[in-house]
Image (cartoon, rainbow, N blue to C red; front, side, top):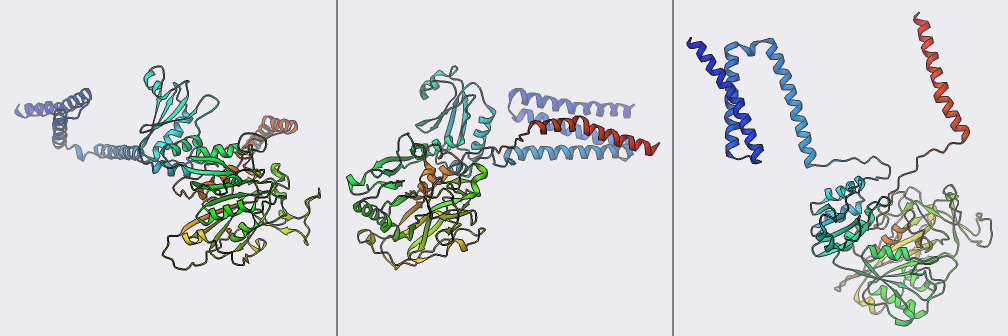
Length: 551
């Protein structure tokens, strides 16, 4: 009787364990706090349950049974699987590993965006005033948020929070604002036809967090490209500079005779007439005091800049760059299609992307001591491209005695160290020695870089002047600026020239490749017949043959 009573007591104690565990879990869930009381219930219940299981197994030799061992193995395997799944979920919440398998990385932030967000100096928040949370927009904002804990976003219904909407000056649904400290800026208005743009968001983010604004002057007075919207204007390029926190202003050196001291970059975009000698000297003096200049010179023009370019080892070729490889994409032979770029910060993220230059002139680069030159844009080798000397002929063909075989250099970036002494007394340029002909260079080899000659020791602080020369300005005009990498070439050149090394370069838009197959009526009918008639007949014939052999 005593043994039976003892067994009943252990049985009751065993059921007390699960009861105490249930009490502890209930208290914790109701109070939403894992305090001392629920922990005491849980620990006591677990201890009693464990002791009950051990005593029961000792009394019945439960562990020695074959069924128990098999069940234990299954339980251990199940617990191991659950533990692995729990660990995977834990790591998944802590570390985000994503693979974007699209060809153009449609769902991955550009390197420029990631770099900007990771080094945010202060917290930034995106406010989306809309009742509809578009999955595509949320995915983009999540990608930003994964880069830094300082980036947050929130969707707001203007009707439920009118005070916040009034604070930002919201006028319509879909408006997206950036806020950092006491600064606020409208990014764009999203709707069914226009989704949130990475380019706009990164540009506005850069403007909001930038502490300095660089001044860019665009030379006028010689038939340069028009800055306001119009035919062959560069208003989109000017707007792009504004989006990247640059302040732009026109500059007429005939009136001022000197480049302003606050000029970070001076742009000469497609002059049709020559500059006065005094204007050329003003640009030379600007470069000699550490300035930065972008020259975009079209064929059939003479801007009278030879004396300036000679100091840097650049000569404008009067021939026309011809490229017959662009016919498959609708480009004529007078529009070189460039897919090869130099190893330079301006073009480092271009890979083998496309940019094109309608009516362009080649550049000849020679070595000059103290100047480091890196060709940026190179056409394809001959027979795909060459420099055509006969500009009047309607039929473009290579003439060995007058024309130059490709690859041709259409753009070059140059740097030169300056000292305060050289700013006041410019030294004459040494006689340039020619670089190796571009036709002798391998297509696979990177564009050459001309090393700087060692300068004499000086106790004065040296500054760096930068110059970018492009044999075309049409690529930056309205309509062409937003196509392929054309806008990136322009914006990246200005960014590099401004010597704002921490400022991210331009972001090119990501477009999905068109993989659709266009079929003729005959091809469509053939596809229908083959799928609905031919393939079923082949399958039926194979089944009959197999049946006949097994019969």
